[in-house]
Length: 377
Image 1 (cartoon, one colour):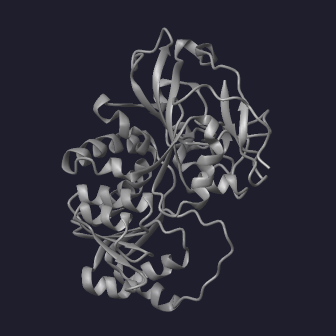
Image 2 (cartoon, helix red, strand yellow):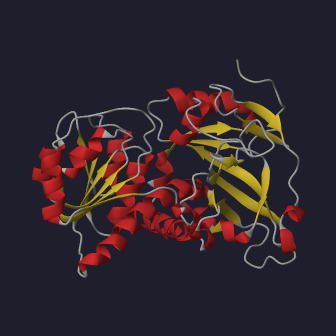
Image 3 (cartoon, helix red, strand yellow):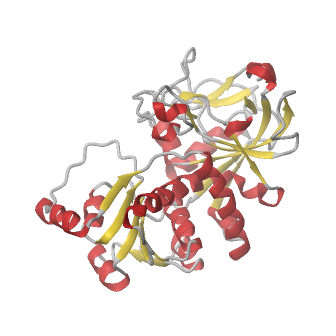
């Protein structure tokens, strides 16, 4: 079968490769689930892998199949699978267990291992292929009514985890009734974080770089959040006009923004960091003032990465709630669709150059089977 492949560390090496057809027998005890891939979303991590900034190939391979935002349909199940049946739509959990104590209790997203395993990212092939086999504990069933939107579940799960961690941490206060939230970043993650917080009843300000109106700002406003551009207002201005903020969710990819956020967080507030910034940027900050503010204000800052099964399941519930509350809104986030694995060049060209893209989706099941070719030049 065909798969899109990238050689980690080699920029622009996207191509088609052949993989053996997966077998139910590859999973022990009759617990295999054969999934046919329908569509896969692309994001900034896929772009970084394409640009050779990230990624690790599985053992025995010199390439990695990217794509960690996969939606598929079950084609067959092993004799001891009762949780799923052929015809079910499913999304696979991305992070898989390593060796730490957290991996052993079902929380690989909290692993303390230096080496970790993520489908389509690190040491495990992703879903830009025709089929894969997995086990039920790593597959999340999507209701038929939400099947077309299931490709959005993985990025939603990242927002779900960050917000859930904020609430879990704030149990320290015994009574915490957050009213106002600020989301920093208006890309897909920022939009999803805004959605999750609006569904919880918070007043939300989403802060982005670009001046409105444009699609991202319109989507944010459509769910009752406010959109503010940092070209027009500083974070201090945003706090005066819309704050103070009990919860702040940072997803800009621009690390200096973290220190600005620390200075406008409310007392007893929590700041969630989700950006993966692999560069070497430095900045000068008012460290004494920030430190004093956090100490005297009982403030918290926490990093969050990836998601566990409970976050995916929360994402399914919020998918349903969002579609019921704002019909058609989620579908507007899918701005570009690419038909078939054979159009991999188009998909990655869009990923690297389409400035108006929110979510690019490869319709894997569309079209005729692709033919393997040589690496891109």
